[in-house]
Image (cartoon, rainbow, N blue to C red):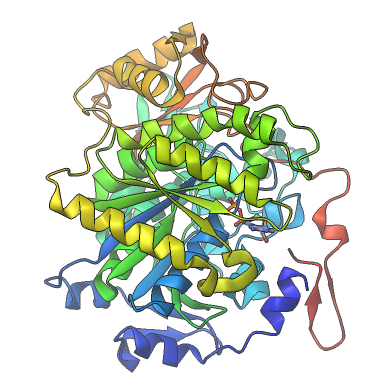
Length: 556
Ligand code: ADP
């Protein structure tokens, strides 16, 4: 059975029952149809004094293009925790329409470890991402309108950093001209679109801890420079209230369920390269108040997603993660060992590829947190291959578990639950506590160098002149104490997608540093990152269909 067929055959509970199971009353949530609900932010206020649950961060080795199953193992682990007697909620990102119709498919887990209703989650869900597009584009419209009506702020039309957004992979919108035609059509200028998940509004949405904070952060967005080269902020257009108003419902975390009827929050979904790649802070915080264990996922591999979760989100949100789970697959490690086939047993390439896992384990241990390796088993994996990974982890003195959660759901996660519990317990007895990798008081260059050397294994960093000029400007304007969000390929630990395994003897080049003043971080660009993806020659859109009864097929 395909993922969507499994999801369509699931016996879902009404969302009220799921809400009740985590202690919510009728006043705490608004159903969106039968199986989705928005949860009121009042729940956070009501539970302010309550102790937080334990936080489990899910990350992965450097993946092969289709993904290594972080979402699948996140969902599988939360199902397994609930099955074996531990109250758990998962907190995940919302899928963007770009990858759904492009190459990667949906993002609601897979096999027997999925979040449902799968089609609804993947197609519009509760409309949050559209609301974010509208909020973002309101700012764009007001910028052009301001220029049209006399440009009192003296906006430099050649130096507007705020683009337009759309939640679709559409390469033709990467570089466009707006305002063509008669004068009433506005001032002509070059412009471009990003995919909505790359919007700074999305990043802010995921880091804000209240509506007031959301509004203030929106006001802080630097959207352009004036002709004297000074920064201009959204609050100078006086529209931060209107932009936040468009997010009134979106800001409430969405509650859904797994195939095994356990609770899940799915809320927010920023890119993991030019943004921090984790679900909203509000959803994570709410889950921590409503459950003993929260499993949450960070995008891409540990060098990108987990690093940003730990150095940006956890730090800004005062979160205290308790354990990091690294998802490893036989196929990804074989890929790092130079395997081209990936389907047949190959101990040699697998053993060679283990260096990638080794590096991610070492990097995560720098945060003073215990690490557990979850082997996400594929049916083509052999026992001998699984044993190679287990032996390696034993040598590194790291807990490891074989997971059959894709095939068996929660039942297949028994070993992982045991190992995660061991790690949390052991850590509680020690005096080790999560510590970020770098101090915010280091210079911008030092912070970038620290990530490059300690997490990527680089020898050093080259800063292009443009990046140095950017940094100078941010220092002058007091933005040097912000955390760093490095935008880099997810395909390699280095900035070169072709370097597999654990590359050594390389340097990272930072071409440009961008300011996300509202979100509260600096984006250091290591290489060209496309923030408006294109569709592949044969997009997933060609496989997706709907019948007369409204039944959807072809989503994966
Ligand atoms: P990630 O979160 O790392 O991007 P996903 O959890 O979305 O990865 O999984 C990517 C795809 O791989 C999904 O289609 C999922 O069904 C499939 N998948 C994940 N784990 C397994 C497994 N153990 N066996 C077979 N397919 C799997």
